[in-house]
Image: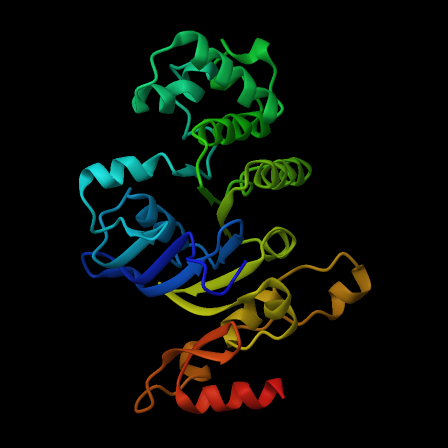
Length: 306
């Protein structure tokens, strides 16, 4: 990866407003080719809306989205339709995201049909191939979603996405509705597919332990704002924004003795920041480590890293 290489996805000043609600407010970030980029935060912080805006499920209020060097949010419908094959989404709820009236084979093949594929033998070949890739067997092809477990249904969702051979997958909390043991299986599946297919993944989640294991870089969102962005190791070793520290303090520890001593940090913006005169900006405090802060906080964060 060279510094001059164009990122696969570049989001600039993305805003997504629903009447008076600023679900996403001036968010900017880049995702490099082959990278797993994590977007974390509490429920309602805007991370899912960011993913849905990128793929075009929401018409953005303002901002620009570049995919593979081309603007897509403000592009023509033809360009957006062409790009949609290169960007696929795995949804959080494996039950609600699958049509109960369609068989597994029909669900997985639907994208190919929409794209214009009409050769039935080729469709069947690709469906069987991708089912095997995600851990399903051919005998499942004529079954319906209600006949599967939650983990199997999520594998169907993964198969539906990867059969299009996308460049970018937006995984919207793909394991939050699953049991812990099944979560690990799905994460490992996504990791295997990423390596085999050269995928780039935007991984939306609220479980920081999962994000640390799976993601190369992490962006932290709070009330529609991206408040901190850094590599996974850097963020966990040197969290700067008080909200990031609050999230990290909430991670349970497997050691009972250490868990008893763990102190939860509560983030109260009015007590943490004074933005009456010195307004916050998105600043690079350390190389590749960005924080939403004002000048005084910026200087304080730099001092803490020395």
